[in-house]
Image (cartoon, rainbow, N blue to C red; front, top):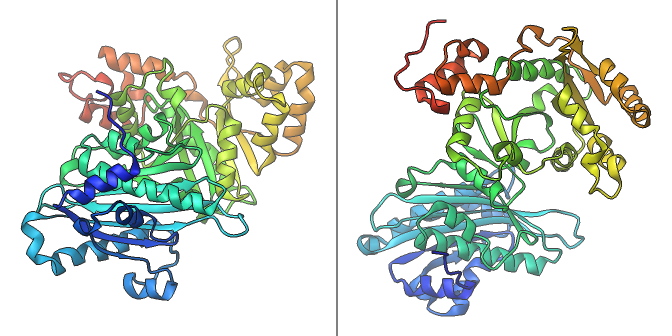
Length: 474
């Protein structure tokens, strides 16, 4: 049954009338927009224990401690820790019959000159039963309205949606989707979502990151090697970024070699700061759902494999590389971006029909792909006829005449580079063939994947690995 969507006012009133829900509001940066909704509908004395805004930095530091930044996850967590800790301490007489909560947000709204990107961290620590351990929901939002007042209204709506959803909706995906009730992604974007606690112990937040992208709340989401969801702008801000896109079904020796060899080349670039470098493995929705349906179990299998290798994962809805680069370049602020491509994938990049729906065609798309500080590292393949390596020299020879000068321009300006030290002995490995061997229980697939990948597949029975099989000695 489809969930009935209440208005912001209806949600706030229902919470106010639920006498067992009681807590504090702490809002920094964009005013008391969330708390204001509860006062406007009446009955706020049943919900609001305290509301405050430490707008001045000195006051904020005195309450929550000093930090390098004020609009960040660390500041949000300090706010939640402080405010939630005060509730049972000061309201001990209500512990037995009250579901306490602490709501906090720290937000940078649009400035007077309209030169910044409005964004904020929003969090809720809450009980679903009196005297229980609290749960926690944390999100990061980007505010897209071009008017500060509209941004504040949108923020107030999201805050009410979060408090209502966490208390009255049980399914975590529905909680996530309810955040934009009364809003659209043109006004506000949720690019990080995390929910945890005793009532959500079975939630895998990597899957929630996927659902953010799948459901259109954002175009890209991230999680780290330990499965912790990350906010892309925080992790990638002013960093040198190297990206390998793939299906990773499963990760093979070829995928690992592509990453390692390209990373060595990337680190040697004069404008790459090795201390500020992030390597990403990227999964697109297209690679996860070629038929339009996403197999969540299969996705988690791939995530387990990639995480076992210590990789940070980016999930995106940027099918075209130029859109991915445009997204990353806005975050990295001109820092070097490297894209690792197999040479057959480069062929698709140069196919003009790919850009038929783009007004400026291939030239407009290439301006985005190569116009920033971007370089493509091209991994070779075998020529089936001669068993020689197929490299950029061969690629140029096969290009149509109208694209040869464009290709030469990119080569002359150091936008394309062969990966010269690729391990040619592994180029015969095809992940689809390895996957088929695993699913059929055939012997020998183990030699095509790294040992950590083999161990993860066997230990956790990934990709339908037969339960009765024992791990072979290799």
